[in-house]
Image 1: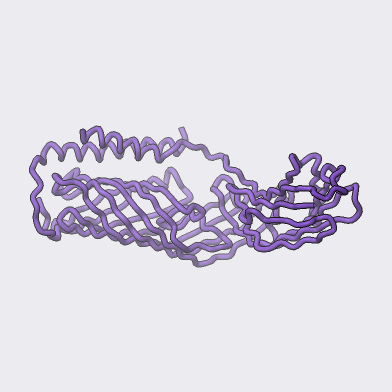
Image 2 (image 1 turned 135 degrees about the horizontal axis):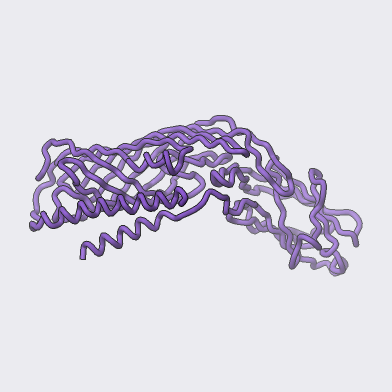
Length: 228
Length: 154
């Protein structure tokens, strides 16, 4: 069984865990929604635990990603996400490395009406990444031109993208949330016209105008002004 | 009802992952398709069938009879330079024509398994007109997903 298959199984198990938590909440919450003013209900801080699977599935990459959201009425959330990524590939025909940071700012909208703590909704982000990359000992094999050696010295690059997401967060223990989101990312600008980045931190492969992604988060709700 | 929706959403999300292996299954060739048309009646007899395309850096040439079909050839631009010159000659006629491509290269790490490839954007073409009447660059971008297209009228 290869690594991608293991990742598939991991994703499926994780999703069922989060759905189970939300279903339990559904049986407990059976109240009609009440119209009320938009209050600030606290802050959630989270870490993307899906990144830790890179140790198994993408050993050439090390990355960290965190998130902070500010809850307004459990309906609107201002969200800031950021992270770090380092990729090192050493192959027979090339060496490639990139390292950098990213930040994403945006908001989420909760579509649930009966769950004062859980989340099922959509979001939008604008992302920016600053990183360096280089490639050396590259051999481009060409059937007519032979093996062409190239070296690309280290360069600093930045990129911008727009991101839409859909996902859920459910409270599994007091103040502890589990959540996932599926995202679609649209590259707006950036990169190098002569050397397409293989890994834009936070975005993915720079050759793609659109990238898809899935994130698995665990959050801690800071127990402050929390609605129950 | 909500339970069913959640199951559907689960399926939708999990299909984002596919089982793949560690081999390179992507197309790594970057090709410029050349469509040739012979309208000069004095050239029609055997001109295309005896056509050879060479570049000064090659040790061999492309021969239409073995590498062409339906008046089409596929060329590869040099990944080592920003210009490539091809010489077109045919046994039934003396002399030859040259076509020089001026382009920008982009180095792309296609995948960890496939390694680096070169993508091209052709900016300009110059050519002699001993036998070539005209040419038209229909597609100037050459990638592993998309062939370039040049039409040559002899």
